[in-house]
Image 1 (cartoon, one colour):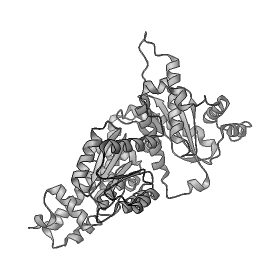
Image 2 (cartoon, rainbow, N blue to C red):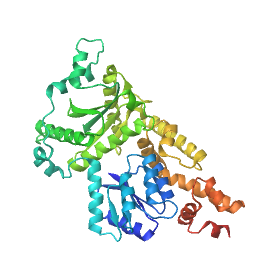
Image 3 (cartoon, rainbow, N blue to C red):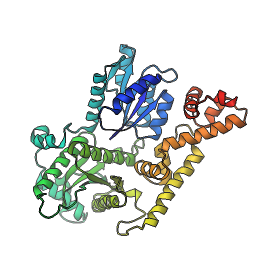
Length: 441
């Protein structure tokens, strides 16, 4: 499911588009609303935003500048521009920044929803069909041949018995088309319970499901990642991601966030288009073909943590390395560890909520977990989304400063982390129902 951020300085526009999207039946998880570019950037830094829908002319920060800032902060964010100005220069700038469409107000509801739908489908890179239609038209829709059996066998042998000194290893690596030298492993496992005696849940049904999942994975990863996806025993799909020295050395891309995004996309697409329950396990990254077996085992162990988190489906091994899967953690141990993660995050946020440009990734790094897992635990433990918690602290501190000091509005805005005094005033009034000056009186 996807998170969408609507940005327009006209509240009625945001309200109307929000209601339209909420009732559209699209695969939307959360809808965020911002009334300025600065507010939008706060969401992009602290929430998992997949699609940005923005106006062009918004005063303090234009939609063009917002798209530029958003791309720098989170390159994976897709965007659609909505504008009252049918100006070629604006459209040209928007398209250069990667806008998927440029829509002119007043919007046609059907056209708007079609545009959003098409963007989400392209983000999926998977066939837009229900499971029954997908299976019925599988061969026509994908035209994917069965994977090369020799290559699949070579890959699974490398996972089972990687021996760099072995005579056959070099041949297996060549057959598997692996180069590396950095590798990570993702595994997709069907969350299918054994059927009761007498029902006809046959092996061929599982084979078909595995085939369908492999198709979705290949469609999603094709052309974007240096990866190879293949069948593994027990009807699992295995995916090896690899980086050369140059790609791995690119510090502008957080590799753990990258793995997390791929895992969430795989899970969302399998659930949406195949209606199949599944769990995704993600390994850490290691250098050397000899570590493929260890990475494979890490991904398998990550999947096992679904037993302890029944409402979560994408697991990164590094989040659980404190608790080897061979050790069944007690409920008390889990509670203590989860509380430590959330407490560490809260302490960091309390110290840095006034920092401009604070990001979810930065907070997660302090807690030594992935952003995905921190978001899940934080909401589960506190009832707040991370960004809502940051806003709460900022508003409480700004109220204290307004009522107990002679600081000016722009000084308070700067102290609690807002780049624009106007944006700060809007957030404050939205939170408390009165403006800073009204509260001062």
